[in-house]
Length: 284
Image 1 (tube, one colour):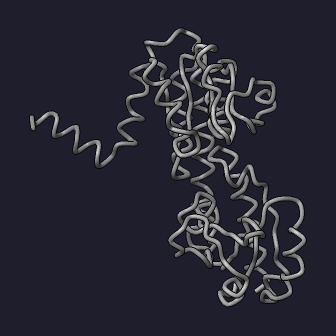
Image 2: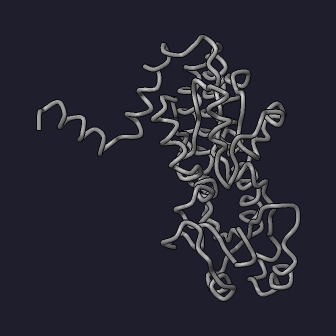
């Protein structure tokens, strides 16, 4: 294998995501001054707005509901799939996709037809600012992306500094009550709890979103519990008295969009969590 090619293979295997992100700006000159953009995932839509690309969006996925302007965009994707023919008809210069959230075959078809596809798959909180900066390269107002990315990075750094030595608090996150499911440390939401000093009682589960039972929850002695939505599911309400007394006292509701979407608003969820865990600490 030629040395140059071998070097590319090594780079691809060791740091492919970073390498791909670094290439984004190279394609910018090929676009029109005001590229037409389609987003196929709610978090990608939100990041596009944060990067100053809101006026460039011509269509988006279902549940792309933030900011308010996104609600009026045509819908070309949902959990069932994407509207391939409609996407083609809209002639986008750039398609923002979600690897794992969008079906691969239609995207492969679009790529073969020459459509530019960028996958928006943040895996760490720090990736959010980086994706905003990279998307800003396609915007006529890149200063918006720079400003929003800096604000996110600053807020994240402040939370890390404040809670890096915080006393650990064992928590249980109720993802679903039927069946009873939670999130391990392999899942996106867990890093928001970890940021605030939360200790996941199911951290070591091999599945990202494991199905558990009530006995497992009780025996792992959570000090507090979190759920999403406005009220606890009715079946779960009758079982909370089985939890340790402290966990019964400290039960918190979180905004699901803040918690599960890899966008700047994830730090709003972190602030909710940090405040809740501080109350548990102060009560000890």
